[in-house]
Length: 420
Image (tube, rainbow, N blue to C red; front, side, top):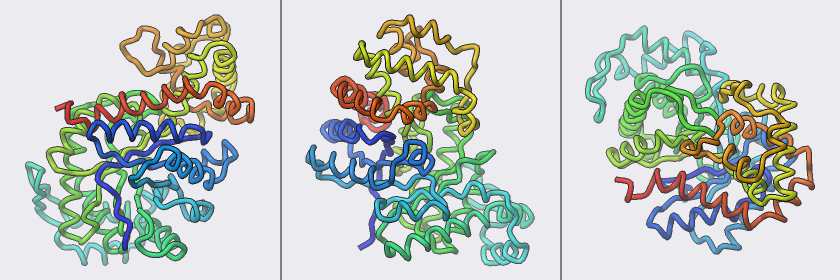
């Protein structure tokens, strides 16, 4: 029997493998409130390398939380943003694979392959009416060839990674997501349709796809961009997916995935509205928001917890360039907006928490400090047991923050029927 992902899945990151129980508690609260939201624990190869962990640790943490809290629903462990070079270490522990092929987008495919694809798909040339999109879009053969040339190698790479996992785990034994979001420009409806047609040609049974949306999806802070444009793109993507499922025999449960979805509060209402309009599912990924709640919890605990939180910030400030470099495309930090180390050393618990907690209505909130700490988990990783021992010592206050953040700020605005 094939593994079929549920309509609403929610990715949570747990960089230091201490918050799985607190995260799962949010899903339990959601279920009690009438929301069927399925947990997916995700962690990328880069995060494992920085923390010094193995994929098995994420599986172990998830399994332990499920057993401890008596979770009876489905759950998944995601090998996040893997490629052919990194996938093998995730094979045993994962049942969800995010195939990241963004680096191959734009690398030209062979001309014969492009022409053959367009020959096989005359329906992609001309006027294309898609239910749910007001106006049909019109393409020429040259335009479809350009789109195909841009994405065909990426699709072939996704197929190669998929076959590699399939050979190890067996067909239908895992969930496949294809990620094309880490690229320069959003995919247009015709581009997404070509991508899905090509994935169907390669017989990749993807169940979620992560396209690039307009605007900035910076780490740990709200969406920056034109909300009306985002809403239009999101609706168009849902319409194209439904069209492609019918036209190409892709899995009926294929759904959109939103990456860097944590804390994008302003887009949650448009997403909820669009999902209701189409009766569609969603996979949304959060990651570093849980790590930030750990630091908030340490600061809120005061005493040695606050001392440790301040030290993490001070060291992050000293190593800002090194920490930010790998995340340059998904952070916007104004160094002039960062408080100095001496200023922060003089803060009390309430001041530190106000600066870091994502509450835009609080005058103390500082999105620059929040983004820097988001990418600063490497500092905590280098602290080793000093940091993880603190997570154990201050678990009650940290767990409360982790659970409330996921349930109150993320799940309720996205999925609660009480939000209209």
